[in-house]
Length: 304
Image (tube, rainbow, N blue to C red; front, top):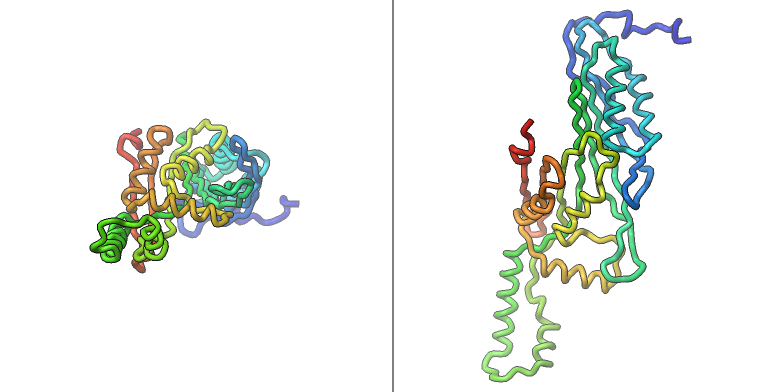
């Protein structure tokens, strides 16, 4: 049937003769499968796909071909190897356009069930927004994974100022007493230990790393777990009072500036993750603006 239908992308010439860097589609809905050790789930993703159009006289690419190729992603778990194969097929499908390059971007959210800090048998779902960028320029393939991790941060400066006020309140309350009754001290602390409290806030770390080109998995959970372990206070899902108390203790023992968080993550990634970039943001409860810090890839990580 297609033989009798007009195809102006083949028969018409471009009115202005110039090549285009990228042509394709954005925001395509599709299911993808994520398979990690101990984890397998089908998730909803949104995809952007493009190829280059170097021939100046060609009016347009074949978007239906890209769409059909993209649909094959639903057939097996995502991996750099699978993405490399898809990008190569995209280029091969556009030989009549002389396409040499292809790229793909996926946006999705990984759903992971996380246990409560203390309460046995209690858990809840936590979402980790992900981006997956893959490109093939000639024979040069690159895949880059980005993840956002939520955590809580308590300001060290605010904590020190709060402790000073509590200390001064304690000295005023017990001034002149040579001996202190432990029960009286405990009673004062129950009523006045929160005379001043440090400010803390929900915070976010965005981390991106390169993936091995021949990898069979994305290594998502390993990356997320490394980030959360470095930060120490990832946000919780299902909690009871005992879990909330445990979380308050974690925050009190884990004071950090935005600079501390960025350095912790970079150090924790070490040499196990390629070409890491870090952006942390503390959504301040003291200010109407955020505090932020970045760690760019080191020159030796990007060489070559």
